Image 1 (cartoon, one colour):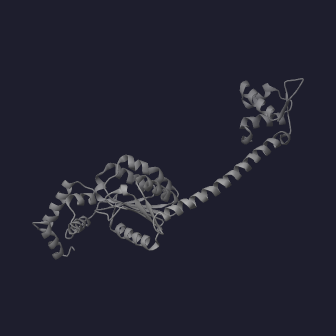
Image 2: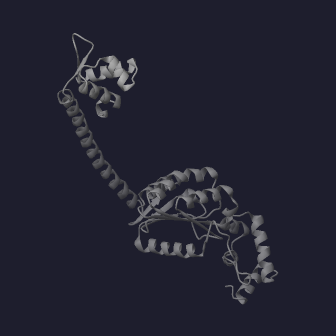
Image 3: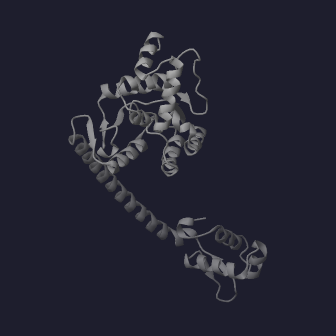
Length: 326
């Protein structure tokens, strides 16, 4: 009852009891409502301060007063405060809109039309959070570089959970190497339980974030994230990157499933290794692309050479062509 003026349910009950039983005294009210004397005295004090009760001069009785007389001035004061608060919020929204417009314009001007250049990791993280919060329909991402730390994954949980709860479709592609990382698998299990989708693939072309098929974020330098990132609004470029995501997504395996390879043909990992050999990558470079150690790279290469019955990496490439793998 009238919480805005500080009244509670028991105050309402006491007022109605006195209204219905004008001859009741304090002991009658205590007995009927099951209140202690201290609680009842506190209620009577509140009702009296708000002019809802008048005490009798001759007996220990209380006479209910018209609520409209006592409460109307107080409610009018509260309404005036709310009107002023609404006016302040309206002004603040106008200022926020102007600042947002200036913020966006300055970011665009920092690069070329349709392109934002973010300098440093802090700027990238701030902008990614903004874009994720603003996403209306979907957020899709390539996450190369191997497993993230448990702390980094936990930091992602509140924002990812909020987006999924409000119906944003989320798709993330990791490297196959994360399948052996317990923290990533646990996170992906939670992520899919909330409605997200996670898949893996042997290698990824780049780090990429796509929001609502209208904005893309890519690093300035794939091998040096501290150099910042580009936020791309150019429709043709964003469309091409979304097509790339679709192609990779179709080839990737859901994280809860085991990748299946054709015993008579190359696996996705085999093709990725051969492509990296053709690109002239070192074992260190291949390890970074696959998110694995150099020792693992050398073991994978040895297995590939054995399958192709090749004595060298060059011969493995030639044999892959001869067998129709490439």
